[in-house]
Image 1 (cartoon, one colour):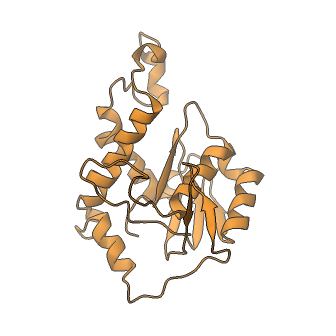
Image 2: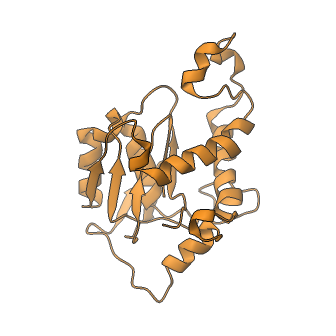
Length: 212
């Protein structure tokens, strides 16, 4: 894979509802034109597309009938569900979550650590909260588009995710069109075209979702 991040969604609270999973998937398959995301360096969010297969864990939002119905109707692709709490079954997304926590989350104002560590705090999480959702989205989108996509990755022979994506999706290669090619609402309530891309996607929980 290219290790590129095709889409994301922010959910506040434990677990993930089907609506957040669907929103993350919708964001992944839609184009992201200028003005649809935040980038300090005006970088394009170049990647999008319908995967050949999706790999989910057993979280409630991922196994929801609503989620599977949406994916079937918009994409007609295979969904594989693996056991929860089994990171070795979806190593790419787990590695991304680790990188995201290390490079982005820990730098956030008010960051309080993993869920399992929060019981040790001597204050309430609400007392440390200091970012709006919009501010959080801007930080996440800038980290993805300005930093992560343009940093070398040992798992792809030192290339950046951007370089690896361009190599795998060269204009000379034929584009795989989704069975239901057309338009689909994206999380920002706009409408953008989507295509089918030759990659396998994985979605992970822990309060965040990401596709690669």
